[in-house]
Image (cartoon, rainbow, N blue to C red):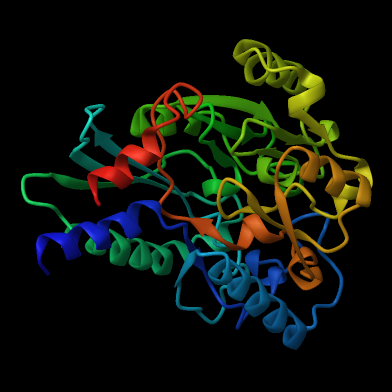
Length: 353
């Protein structure tokens, strides 16, 4: 490739929303645990596998229709929860881009925190996901500009934590929203150890804001969703009262954001339909469940988001929805968030034009 082709390839790798997905060929949440018990309180209904495949492909097609890219993890027999690709890892890519009139890229570092599952039966998924992650990092190396170092760090956590299911990156604030539980003996009450948050902070160089999840919302992405324009989609009952109070102070008050404008409260019915577990494709387009309430859909539209509703009932039967089944691998953003550096993405684009 010549220099212009390399720049074009690198621009896509850094800025084109890219999601890891796994076709639900062997989808069966009961296989997550050796004793066959269902792993969360949302599971239990009989799954229609043909319908699950149809809905999954509809979701994949929608991501691509909206300008995203999907890279596939090969399905493995016996890995019944593998479709939930958010859980095996959390990602961030640091792009050092100058603030000059004609910006340039000085360095790129890709980092992944590889999960240690509380549901031991899911640890077998890590190898296949790691192979797909390696493929992506190889693509980054192949698109390396002359004189621009590209590095990758894949770190296995010592403490239990479950990828971007329990570590959601807030690009607006530059903060990880990370869930934890004080009792990991019951996976329906939470999956992550708070001690893993220090590992994530050290690895990525970004603040980790810890919130204690509340049963039945075992992962933070089932009840709390930071949105690209600074809004927060939140079901108060999904985290403890102390965590909810602290979240409002850190995420709203400290950024001087009015709660009435930026806190989008979610009803219990919408929360149990996993309305918070949406996929952010870009700054405007959100993929949400087709049974979202008119009231919540109206709030999101008023806040400036464009909703794309899809049926996804069969994935919900296993305890997840859109965010759970599409893990964005090329998350990037300035340290301190776009609120403090709103031209960050434009500078990268200019540097690679």
